[in-house]
Length: 422
Image 1 (cartoon, rainbow, N blue to C red):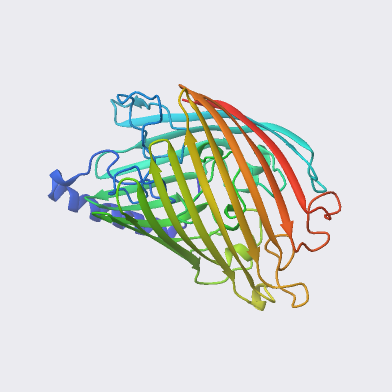
Image 2 (cartoon, rainbow, N blue to C red):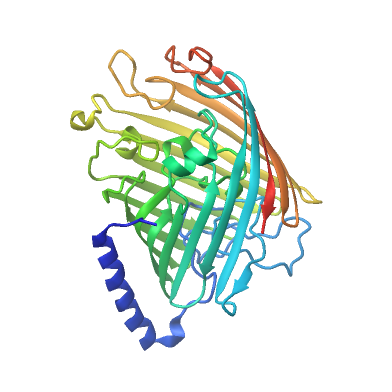
């Protein structure tokens, strides 16, 4: 998988050699498996405060306390969890995976989309080494990235046009409460993850539609008591231009409550415009404030997001714009392997048609409200869940909304996903 350019590879070689010398001089300093984070978005606060991105590893209702602790990657918000790992190479490597299918039906589909879809949503394998001073994570296979308010893209076209068959993978160098990762990394931005099985809801939301998902580059993570800091130099929206800087700072008040501030932006400018590298978003700045509560059967995660796309006529942005939005991600875990998740959210863009502002939603200056509810049943490795969602556009530009001619302000959608974590 081609994820980094030659200069970054040279940095990797230098880091590896330096880290090897440092860790061999202090052989007792290697950190145990799971002691450092996977390095991605802010998660529920039930994990150890020493994790740069605390992962929800609280015991679901009805699960035995002796069940294996989930692996650091892939990151999971719940209610689903990765299966017990299959150990190979004498226990030095851990292998897990997911296989799932998706069905979707929607109203007011746009021209080029269909009212119903059936497809493979995940057929992925995860291989990782989680102990020692050098570790790694590899993820490969088929995947789909469904999101509300956007047309459905087939799994084959998603792989071809987005991140390829190996969407994530990195080398990790560990020293005490500090680590360095290099490769194709999960972004630090936002509160929702990239793949369907990682999230509370099957489809990602309106705020996620403004964020990047996978960054190619380098990330540094450091923890001190209740404070966690991460910094990344990367290519933003998969642009292959290393001009993005992203950082996060998380404070865990206790085992149930945490607050995170996340910021990122393009320090340069690039006129590339593809599905994986949209012109406007790749030249944006993004800020998040994320609060997380996780205790007992409840997970509640409200967050605020602000984005700004500056005016830059040299790359085709004649009049910039931005968005402000908020969402609340919630899950309640019942007994007997049932749970229900809900996600209300609202987003509003700036600018107008009259001043020639760029379109970030459903026309310049438009907004949208959405509500998604997701009941879920998961037993052992099997899971079955479904989304019922509605998106309502406000101040919409005619022709930029839903329906075959873009005049509808509403789009209802129903989704079902079933599969196995193995």
